[in-house]
Image (cartoon, rainbow, N blue to C red; front, side, top):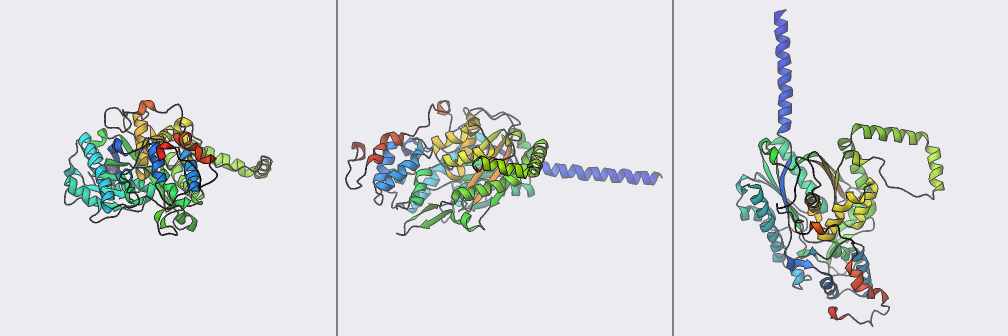
Amino acid sequence: MEFLSLLYLVSALYICYLIWKLIDQKRDQECYILDYQCYKPTEDRMLGTEFCGKLIKRTENLGLNEYKFLLKAIVSSGIGEQTYAPRNIFEGREGSPTLNDGISEMEEFFNDSIAKLLAKSSISPSEIDVLVVNISMLAILPSLSSRIINRYKLRHDVKVYNLTGMGCSASLISLDIVQNIFKSQKNKLALLVTSESLSPNWYTGNDRSMILANCLFRSGGCAVLLTNKRSLKNKSILKLKCLVRTHHGAREDSYNCCLQREDEQGRLGFHLGKTLPKAATRAFVDNLGVISPKILPTRELLRFLVVSLFKKLKIFSSTSSSKSSGGTITTKSPLNFKSGVDHFCLHTGGKAVIDGVGMSLDLSEYDLEPARMTLHRFGNTSASSLWYVLGYMEAKKRLKKGDRVLMISFGAGFKCNSCLWEVMKDVNGNGNGNVWEDCVDDYPPETLANAFMEKYSWLNEVEDPDNYELPDFLK
């Protein structure tokens, strides 16, 4: 009897040990953000209204109809007058970029943001174990990641991942790579570098689906320092809770809606197709379907099940009521995402993107303010835009310990990626190199009215494309 009792005791202790070991291993697999640094280009790279007008005017292949189209696109884009562009545009060489233009644009970002990030986090470059770089539209030899290793003298055994062609959703793809490394290797530090090279990618033709990219994309970038070291947990600002990636590349319309290609005259550009909104909606819905059970409380999921069951039982009455309302289709999600999320960090792909996500998730103007202000101040900085939105929340002192932040991004392919973060401590954005610290008090402004309409509205009154007078500042 005593032997059996001893056997039971040993078995119970062994089971407890296994459970403890499993929990202990899980603690070493967490993904924390220690700090991040967004890039603010110098003032001489800022795109003012008058300069934009001169830039469009000197594009030889554009005519009056294209001017009117661009005016409408810029005015409705939600982008302000303080965004940034590459240097070759200010030098008048956007139509004939060199390889060095793209490299110097990236190195200017690397030398600024990575240095600031390592300095303020007190991390030596030799401590970096993993480097993940995503620059979608610039591939060179040696790679951009190799240039970072050379510039900061990283260790010879650093694990390197250099991503291209991932589009605006590349940040969360890079984050997924880091997360998977952390699950299998303990005590690691990872540097995630995300940006986009605009210097070699200015479109000089007149295809409307391709000149839109010139209006939307702006210079920017971000460097993020991540770790799974237990000893650094108390220094971290965010902890990754879950991440979901959705890729609809198997669908022809989704695959072709965002495409780098040449126009009929052989000019290279980035095509944004008419099927883009439909492809984005479809990917967004599928992504939400996977991440919702991971981030929403049980009570909200049960409420959704009860409401869905009730609607199915009342299907005939619902059909008749929809007909009587004129057949309006609503895209609003039946789930209340605010029950499990405190802050929404949305990709600044444009005003229509922000409005669409806001409508789908039933978000208030307060929820959408960080994305709107980021779009207005910095424009669409591609994969790095999410971190500018997060920086705005930090600068406004919105992030409190225990809050949950949902990031949502879209990208060519077509992809929709999302993740949920938990705030580890109250975050004060002042005095730590936040790109918003010198202007956050000016946001939100009284109006987001675009100055382009005030300055260029005379274009809409021109009827003869061969006979009209230019204002003095465009001559």
